Amino acid sequence: MSTIFRAAVPQPASTSELGPLENLPGTWMGTGFSLAELPDHEGGSPFFLRLNATQETLTFTEIGAPILNRGNLQDDIVFRGVHYLQQIADAQTGEALHVENGMWLYVPATSVPPSGPTLVRMADIPHGDSFMAQGAPVADVPGAPEIPPLDSTPNGSVFGDGYFPPPGTELPPGIPDEALRDPAVLLRRALKEQTVLNTTTLDVRTGPDDVRNIGFVVENANATSVRAALWIETVRRPDGTETLQLQYSQHSILRFPAGPRPDPAKQIDWPHIQVATLIKQ
Image (cartoon, rainbow, N blue to C red; front, side, top):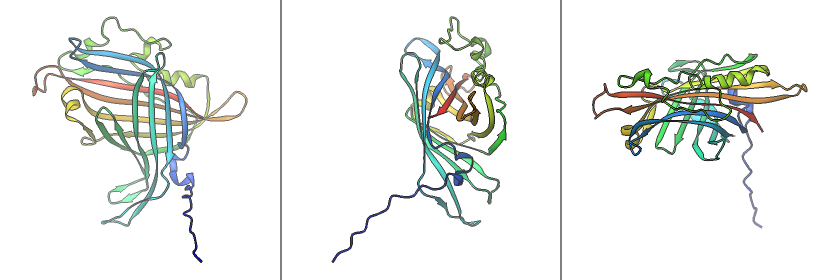
């Protein structure tokens, strides 16, 4: 007589092992705003400003097993994380604007290097960009977050501040004028009429060698840095029930050549900014 063995479906880990990431698994949906200056060689202009009101779906799935990293100068560490898929479309036309997949990891404290618990965000974008951003979490702070401003002004020796905003700039319907200079006003506006009970902050940024791009991107609109903050908020509704809300701001730098290479004096750094307020479904 033969015995048949059936492999069991892996049991999900307790979300408490995800630390500050524990509320991320699931699907989040909402709206936001994207500001990006893009090169325009075909159009005969150095750049053009693209502004979009956005609709977004952001999905997190827990990585189904512990992640073991073996130590040489210290004992092994074990940590957890989540996969994510981000999909952003124009709120008016439905045109796809951005897709990104990656992971968020929660790494325990280490002795080599000496560090407290850290966050890692690893991302891939189909334009030909990858990055790794790191930071430290701040979990379960009472009340709403203090959301800092985001400066959308370019920095460069050729055009400088006087080039922004370009003449004739029009914001999408529903986006206030002040969001052009500081898109984070949309996040603060969303919080004004809300009762936020507590907030977990996930704040990460890239280091000098943490962004990688294909050759075309490097030569035409080189992505050089990324910093992002996610605020996971417990919100009390007017009826007394609670829901989870995720707000984020992301500030990337795209470096454009404004003259023949390799003249570093003829470059301009344009911020690419994304903000959104999403509700867990």
